[in-house]
Length: 42
Image (cartoon, rainbow, N blue to C red):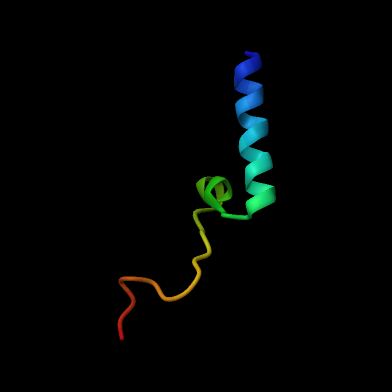
C-alpha cells in the first residue's frame, strides 16, 4: 500500500515539475504538444 502511495505521489510530483501533461491527459483527454503535429495537414 505504501508503494502505491509513493508511486502516485511521484507521478504527481513529476507532472507538476516537468509539466509534460501525461498524467493530466489521462483524466482530461487533452495533451498540449510543442511544435507542429506530425499528422497535421499542410
